[in-house]
Structures are given as structure tokens and as C-alpha cells.
Image (cartoon, rainbow, N blue to C red; front, side, top):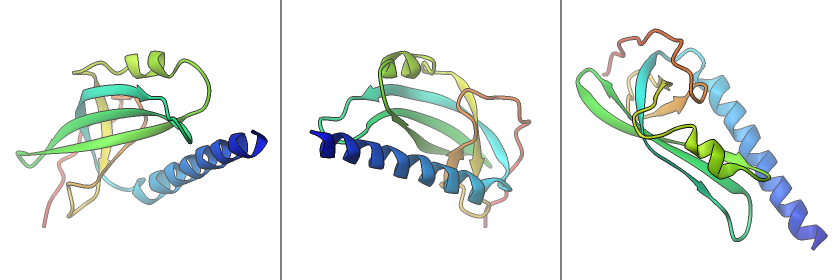
Length: 120
């Protein structure tokens, strides 16, 4: 039993570290406003629970979709997912020259002024 709990904790930590690396690599990317299309809590049978937030954004008139997976350790995952109902605005970072690649900047934030992203 102890090994199983340790496996879940390791998966959670790996997901957190991957998220930090993703944010560091994208910190200079321009931002656009996105809208949540769905959000839900996935209770894992094995491994780490996840809150998934799906969103849609536009760059140069073209529509794109993205997904943010937040590792969740503990209770209240449903309540966290409920903070992002369909239509909620948030800010995403968009990779220059590759607008189909995006990263949610800060869940629930819309402070950044959307910037126009140039595509190749």
C-alpha cells in the first residue's frame, strides 16, 4: 500500500515539475484571451487525479483549442473544476510561429492585455 501512495506522489511531483518547465519555456510568448469550453475532475483509478480545463482561442482569425491538466492531490477537485465554467475567460501564452501550441498562464487570470500573434 505504501508503494502505491509513493507512486501517486511521484507522478504528482513529475506533473508539477513539467508544468514549471512549461511555464519557464513559454514566459516570453505573447498572450491571448481564451474561453473555457469545458472543465472537469478526473479521479484516477491508478495514479494522480487531474483537473482538466479545455479552452478555445483565436490567433489571426483562426480558431485553436488547448488543454490544461492540473495534477490534483487530495479532495475538492470537483470544486476546483467548477471555478472554470464554460465561457470563463483566461489568458494563454501562444508559441510564436506555431499558434496551435499554447500554455495556460495562470488559471482564471485575465489581467494581461491580449497581444496579436504573428504566424509564419
